[in-house]
Image 1 (tube, rainbow, N blue to C red):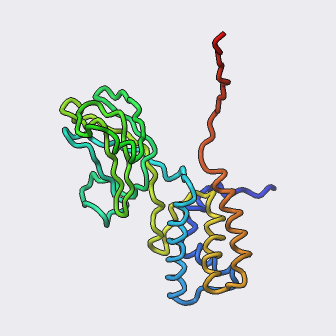
Image 2 (cartoon, rainbow, N blue to C red):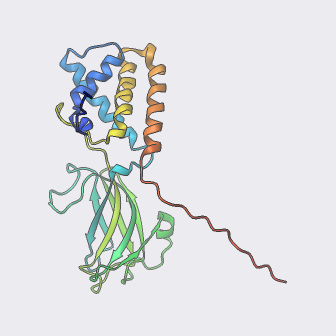
Image 3 (cartoon, helix red, strand yellow):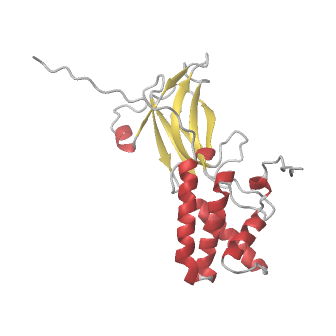
Length: 242
């Protein structure tokens, strides 16, 4: 009689922080027996998640939201964390960057907006001109991210929306019994990455070896991230003057 399978797909959610830490310590030949060792590992895991923010776009952290436009207000604020900004229940937290945005009117019809840089925005002659927004400029500060629209919404646009996709930060580790804010594809590189970080403190003779394991597994996870779509390439036709 054939053995049965588990029928579950929850390992990444039941693989708690303390188990991740235990796995990482075992890879460097240690058992975490002291509370201080657990605390150090949790701190290293949080630092690693911050470093992942420099590794390109993580598609599981892309989210969608809308901003309600206010008459005469061009700049709107999202916060990096709840400790940085208002306690307003409507505030958006954990924002790292805005990827794309559209102006959505009262009939729920979207008009794409063009993302511009600081120099282009600075070159606009009259930044207070009111009308339907067509461009937006994103600034990323230490404690917040702002999106500034051009044109500035007027009374006709007030109450309509800017619908946007943004990149969220990876959530903090938190309690040892928590799961991580990471999909199953990144579990292997998360464990090997933490082992690499801990080796710098407890087993420096193995740091280079563990770094190779970590970078290899992280590269595979990053290459698998996202949702592939069709690509169409059309040749450009030239008609020279004759």
